[in-house]
Amino acid sequence: MKQTYINCLKKLREFRKNLKIDKDIKKGKLYFTWIRDKTEKIENEKNEEFICNNMIQYTLKNYKIDTYTYEGLDRKLKSIVNDNYILKNNNYIFNNI
Image (cartoon, helix red, strand yellow):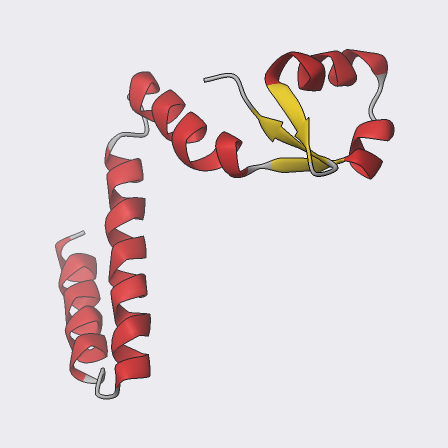
């Protein structure tokens, strides 16, 4: 474990040092933000409250079901969509926080 961690730090340091131009710096910021967020999720993967809050905040509210997909659902799934989503601009958008 320790050696893997050290190797990871070396690669991250090497990556950071190679960020020279603005485009690379923006890509680096996005990458480091992604790593931070993923690490937080892994640290809290057994915390059900954290999982539920993040699912609602980051995933479900951004997930859209188009009308074509909705029409292909069976009655039970349509009922779930009708209870938790609203139709807006031909897309069903999560609306049950």
